[in-house]
Image (tube, rainbow, N blue to C red; front, side):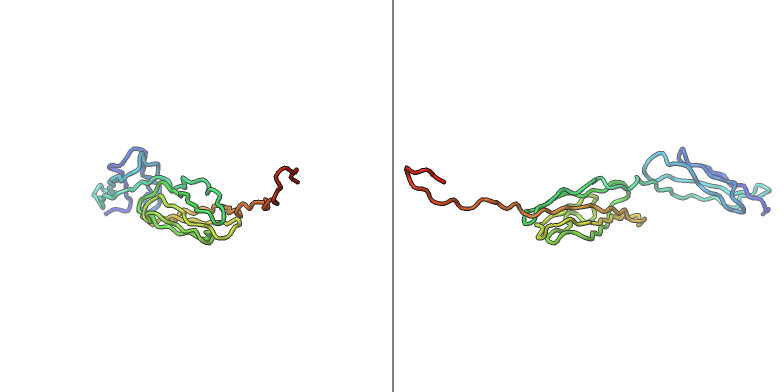
Length: 173
């Protein structure tokens, strides 16, 4: 084999290119996949005299950008039942989830492998909580993390007292 290699993209999706200006035997794929899914890539490397040094195929998996579809968590009230949904989009299901900082009495429920979970329960303490939620897709890429502010208000207490008894026929004061 000669010292100079020619690298060539034989097939692949539109928008994907092979940068052959890399030094040595290296080349780099670049561009933007045209759609979410698995795309077959075929490359060939030839030496200076045109002999094939390598032909290979591999799959490029293009996934949708991971994002939280949920923008905020609704407010809760201490002692009152609470339910809200948390949803992530993109990535590859199933997901693994981690939650830190939920108010006492609340927990993460629903299908653990799906992109839609629920926070349910009855908060036992009022206050503002920073709830950190991480969802990691099955491609085991870096998890997507977002910190939500969840306010739990104290229960509404009536300021009314029991009225005094009145006498029929007399003005009440």
